[in-house]
Image (cartoon, rainbow, N blue to C red):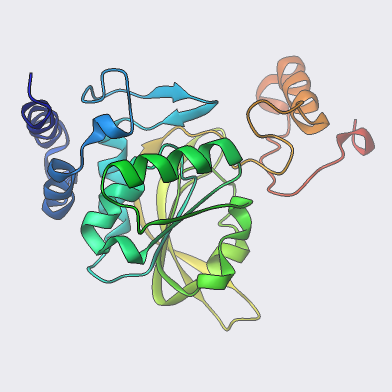
Length: 251
């Protein structure tokens, strides 16, 4: 079947399922992006999948996150967690590909996202290998920042890279999370943020730190957290810190 027909069927189903939760601009953008250039297996099914150790978001999740982000044409945007590049491509349709920047901590995924975006006609999107919590300060400030990984608190370095009236959207909390939009408050030295919108429950993996990329030897942090959670359940510390924690000092 023609991929355009499959793509229209996918978006029609999203419109029916999400109803008021969809932004018509996002709907139109998703109709134009060839998702098969980013996802090889059943690209127009509304389902999550896994690739190279990363979660490929279901189209419905992408639509929800972009509706919460509310990007406008010409907005300078940053995607934290480039993955296979699909979210960045939809954003490129909304703001223009030269206004989209993306980072990922896994070098293999950076290379693949660049290749996918180029093949799909979005080669002007910039993708770089970075620790997501550090953002991309060389290109700041950003009008919109989208984080495709969970955190207990909005990463302060990302908040500091927001433009005036900028918006940061991320899954906030752990283990229970809510898709949340925040804006920067205070001056540049304080880098505080305030919640300006909540958009329902989500379930994401925590933001990775250096050493936790797919294919690398697991860091002590991960092992310790898993062991402690298994032994103590809900009474265990969540361990969703963005910086390295030496659990040997605490256990």
